[in-house]
Length: 378
Image 1 (spheres, rainbow, N blue to C red):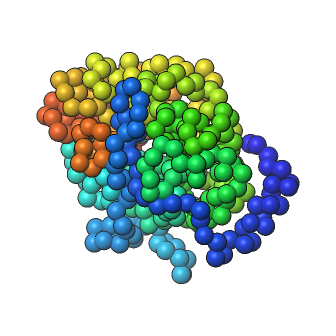
Image 2 (cartoon, helix red, strand yellow; image 1 turned 90 degrees about the vertical axis):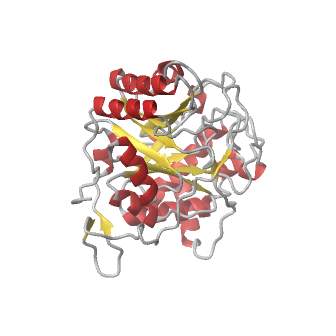
Image 3 (tube, one colour; image 1 turned 180 degrees about the vertical axis):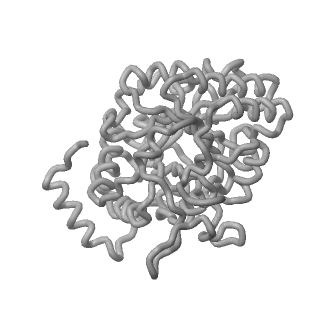
């Protein structure tokens, strides 16, 4: 593990003492689809992917699966340790749904799949604090929360100097990051955190080609954010470094964007089918490039296939590829319609043939047993 300098610790310690009353320099907003960008690159379509507000009738925290808590603290579902999640005994089946981790959207997709998800992915901008309630909703549904944490605000413009990587690395957003980390630490439970994903594309402000960023700035920003979490003591985070597949990124090399094995727990890959015959041709070149510099476990952190005559075949091949590929620990399906913000309608159940391929594919995998918490019945 990388050591933080004494001076750095002192500076962060001073900042921690002064956090009360501080406000973040972040903006607000929702988010956009990932490798749903055109094959040739360019900005993806806007997608409102922020979680539904907790506290509705079907989303209220608490329940029979929750572990006892001390007086005055929220009742939370008992979970495993970070170490127990890192190397699963079986493949993770994950879902990213509109308004996830809302119970209703999860239940609908799970019913179509015939399996409960083991990971629930959702998205947050930098105006949003960490929500223990949203994480608890995932735990109650027997799943590990995977938060895609996006450093930008209301605007979906690719160029936003306000969120330049150097500003993140130099401390402009430290008050917000530390508050976020403190709240993560306070629940004492693992969460997977996917910070500034698809950094090798040109459609986000944290691309080194945008916002006045320079080569090397991404790694500096990642390490700075990671170090703040370590100093705060938020050590149960599973750090997910998640580039886009190589296709459509203009030949941007991945190795210079990698923060290093000491800063990453899982490597994610975002890759979608845009009419290709197989998922293999979409995913394998990127995996080959990654294994040249790291052998960390790989999670396909966003995937789906555009509708069309090849959708069912592409979906079937995705499962064959996962099954035969060492070090791939599972996938997260981007279960969004076009109206919900996907570039295409990526829902696996829009076509009987694709739904059948999806269900058969899940049956072919050795899935990690559900629930992935250590709680009781769900």
